[in-house]
Length: 325
Image (cartoon, rainbow, N blue to C red; front, side, top):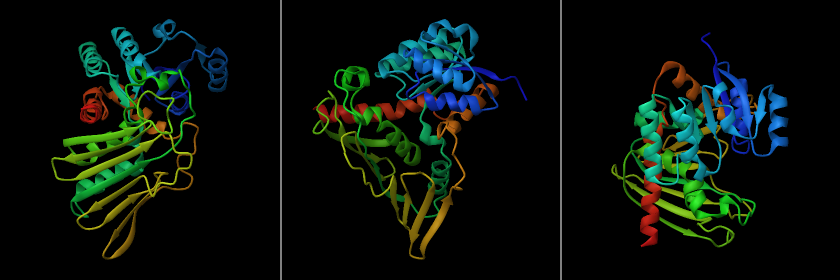
């Protein structure tokens, strides 16, 4: 095996699964975990057999690649600092809160010849990779309409960065819904028109919307819809995705473990994950981490590279612009 890539994770909330994934990957040598909560960093470091710090800038001499899992408004300045030191960077979504910042990070990575990837974790899940293959095959005709439901409740935290629109980058659509807007663009191509409506009802502690409905008309004629919320006390969505095509209905449940299709011939299971699959502490992050590390080792562009990730950000910004007018 080639030399392991020295890695670190900054931010052990969203980043905890990154740390477990680096620990489990044969491609990685997890050197550091970093968090402002020293007790938390120390505990994770002891569990994973690595070092810990509270200041990420002090460890850069000892790593090749870094996961930045920090508040959104810190993504761009931290990424630019890491890239300037020649480090490969995996950034938790979003890439940054403005288009100008996104382009600065993308350009810096290209100029410094380092790998830049955005952690759109769902893109790498086996079920959704299979769904993309099924849609591209045309086996069940052309997609007409795709519905996506993302329901949940975020513990109110007034005054936190999550509550502030400038630091979060918007509301729930930008912060969490971006995963699913990204998937719709991946599945169906270029958007022709994007509209969105949002409300703070039930999430008044947020400056941005806590519940949003976004609709995308694609150039292909496919219509996509994402309904997402951080304000629902009881989540009971009918599925993660329901995709109606000219020949049937394709359904993916919330647990991502199966794909079903209903046609005139009846119901068919297109994909079914083994019960023993994906039981590690790394959870779903292992797939994106392995991709990131492979792209570094093979000097190739990640699927969710900076320019690709910017597409979903632009779609959401376009939807916000319509809603604000």
